[in-house]
Image (cartoon, rainbow, N blue to C red; front, side, top):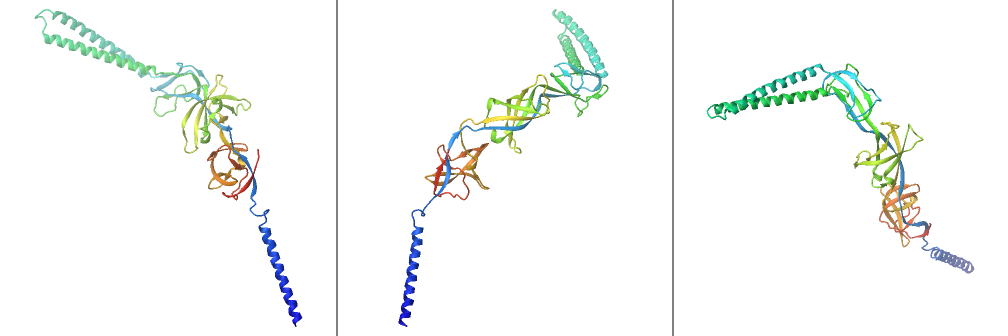
Length: 368
């Protein structure tokens, strides 16, 4: 019995010693200098300044330099047409003639009234001159008579002037019977025929005249590019009519306002078109080259983390991660222009993720 008890005690003590040795081994493994406090290793790069350049293609529309709608100022019937669509005209050229007999009759009537008023004025003036000369002899002409003849002469003079103004005004209306080109260009629309009655309000214009010697190229430039510098202040364009030919366009003006719906600004370029090769109304593909006026911070696209709440890069300070919010600018292939609390020389994680939390200690491997 005693021998059996001794055997049981020996087995129990041996088991306890084995458990203690196993626990000691695990503790040593946990506290091993090779295992304890080891930081992750990530690739990083040193932030540098660079020139941010961007080339984009935008749709544009070609418009005439000037587009004029020509209407009739007097009522009448078209007597003669001198032009048709496609006609090249010069400034002051007669495009059409309106027949309005009542205007000619009215002009003749007013001319006759001018003659009558002039005759009355000349008679009263002659009578006043004679009375005035006679009044220089005392007692011959009463003062009231002299004043009366003077007043009559002045009234006849005013009537004569009024008749001349009325005749001149109506003669000017008569000049409107000839439809004159206000500028040089090409007739693009004709809405009348010989015999058409014109001069009513709200009717279509008689002609539409476009000056196509220089065309306006209108482009809606996205807001992100409106603060950048357009290289050479010019653009390059192609059209569906001439897909293999490139045309130069010079920036002429900007609208100075961002459209709330499209978030873009209207820019207008001038395109020489002396031979009328290009046609207004055509759509164009416009190539624009932009550059920042000063160097910017440029990072690889992979270094920017985008979530629903923010955009950020992970900056390293003493091998400790720090999430830094950024605003993005130009995207240039595999590079991204960024703005934020960053400086040239900062160390940035090359391929960060949301799992790499701020305040984490890591080991960086700097890549060129």
